[in-house]
Structures are given as structure tokens and as C-alpha cells.
Image 1 (cartoon, rainbow, N blue to C red):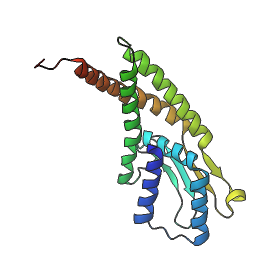
Image 2 (cartoon, rainbow, N blue to C red):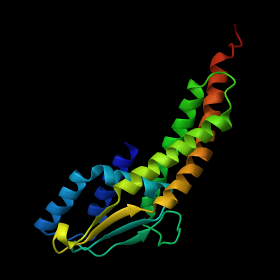
Image 3 (cartoon, helix red, strand yellow):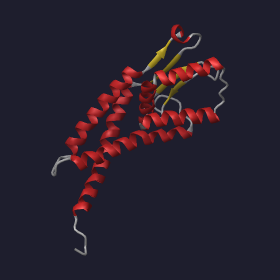
Length: 188
């Protein structure tokens, strides 16, 4: 959900402040790509939000593309407003750790629970990104080539780190809130 919201906000900001001079056919092509490949685009946004390098290419009359990474990992840095995308994995992993702690049995091991969750998160997200990369040649898009997709290896590594580190913080927040909920009030 956060990835979809991020994609829509990014597109809106790009259209509002960018130098986009689209012809009707190019606008229809972009709209078609957004609707038809929304899951792929969301996977790309989440991979980008992790900091993995993302290849974006296409010649739609507004310029080429390139490789971008929020962490500057082998790529050019994006526009400053795109750093808001870091909130996508941060919020998801923080919430995941919090919920894991709240649903865990008393005495559950944080390292074991968060470790398994981090591996599962990284594997699933890497699979989605690997399957979701878009790469269209001229045979599909006419005179235009289009490519969008994060680096799967980078996504795996960064998803593992994000889920473990931020998930652990979420676990600790869940731990402190459950401790506060069971603590008797001073006036009782």
C-alpha cells in the first residue's frame, strides 16, 4: 500500500514540477503502463525505497533515464524529494516488528523471530522484484524502449538489513507498550 502511494505521489510530483512535454500518444502509453503494470511499478518503488539501485529508462520525449539509488550505491543521486521513499520500508518494517512482538508468546526470542521474518521478507521481496522488472523493447512499445527495475541482489541485501534493524526497533517498541499495558496504575 505504501509502495503504491509512493508511486502515485512520485508521478504526481514529477508531472507537477518536471519538464514533461508529452504528446497524446505518449500520455496514453504511460497511462497504459501504469495500469497494466501497477504491481511491477510498486515492487520497483519498494526496491527503490530500500535504497537499491533502480534502472529507469525510456525515451518518451522528456529525456532518457538512468540508474538511481537513494544510498548512492553505484548510481547517481535522485532528486531530494525522493528521499521520502525511505519511509516506505521504514514504516513497514517498524510496524512488522511491533506486530510480531504484540502477537508473540511471552518469552519469545526477538532475534529468532525477527531473523526469520527478515529472511522471509527479503526472499519474498527479491522474488517480487525479480519477476516484476519491466523491460520492453521497440517491438512492444513502438519507437520507444522502456525499462524499470531494481537490482535484485541489492534488494535482497537491503531488505534483510532493513527488516532486521528496523524490525528489531519495532519489536522493542511493542515490548515496551505491552509492558506499560500490564503495569498497574499508581493509584490502584
